[in-house]
Structure formats: structure tokens, C-alpha cells
Image (cartoon, rainbow, N blue to C red; front, side, top):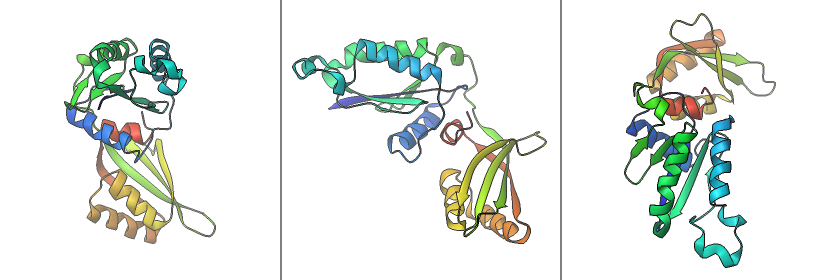
Amino acid sequence: MSYKLAVWHSERAISDKEAADLFTRLYEQRKVPIEQHIDVYSFYNELSANYPEVDMVAEEDLDACPWACAHERSGAHVIMSVMDDKSTEVVPMILKLADKHGLVCFEPQSNKVHLPSQLQSATTSSERGGTLFIVEMDGGQGKEYEVGFGERGAMSRNLKMAQVVGEDKLVDFLTGEIGLESAKVDSAINELKKNGKAAIRDVVLSDADLLILGLR
């Protein structure tokens, strides 16, 4: 048996529910963040200096290794599995390191998020609202779409989210990754067919969406 912990970079305070949602998406590898954050890199290096990853430990020293398996990580997150008999020693150290490096730490066993000191006084409301802009691109043999997101009050499409090939994949992206209602997606597809571009207003993205989609 093992005890899981996850840390990741966040610029906003998030709730237990949002953290649980993001953990599930990261753990199931439905999406892996592509951005790099120095605070995550520094956390991983200091953690590994204290407790090297299991594949870096000599066979005769494995009994002392606290890890049940190799870490799952990207430039924005680290998921660790701690052996149960080592958890009382290692878990407090991970929480301390996460706070030191300004990272969110989540315990999926209890669905509890630990915010770093600089976020603890911030609001737990971490949703960003605005408009999705979809533009049909010249993709040669197949249709390609660029999807962007503009915050409320922004004058233009200011953040590129994704480039999607094919109408079916665009629908999957909008309904699956963004979580839009089918009616809104159908309306946008019809608008795309007529004008080559579409806008979906009043879209709310959570902190989990922002990190997964590379907008953080």
C-alpha cells in the first residue's frame, strides 16, 4: 500500500474540489501540462536530494527508500507514492518543501489541499470567465481550428489554447476538455460552417482547466 501526494504550480488559491478534479486529470494522464516552472524543478531537486527516486537507489538500499514507484511528473507537477510505513517521516517533509517552494500540495486520500503561505490569504475562487474564439484555418487536406480564450474585458483573442485538426476532435475538445454544453458547441459548429469563425461567450474556466490547457 502507498500514500499519494501531488504538488503543482498555481498562482491562485484553489478549493479542495478543484484540486481533486485537477489531480484526477493529472493522475489519469488525460492531459499533462506542457509548461515549465522553476519552482516545481527546485522542489523536485531538493526532494530527490533527500530521497532519491526508486530507480536511482541501489538494490541493497531499497528497504530504506520511501517510494513505492517512480514519480509521475511534468514541468508543472509531481505525483509521489510514499510507502505506508514511511509516510509519517516523508509526508511532513513534502508538505514543508511544497510550502517552501510556493507549491500547492494535495492529499487525494483525504481530498485535502494544502496551500502555500502566499496563497492562504487569497480567495479560493479561481475561475476565469470570458469568450472562446474559434477560427477555421487552412489545413490542406483536413480542416484545422485554432481555439483561443479572451478574458472578460479583453479587447481581442489574447490567449491561444489549442490547435485542433478535424471537426470531430474539435467537438471532443470543447465538450470533453472545456466541458461546454452540447447546445453551445452545436451552435458554434454551425457558425463556423457559415463564417469560418465562431465565438462562445460566458465560458468559465477553473484553475484546473487553466493549468491543463497551459494558460497558467
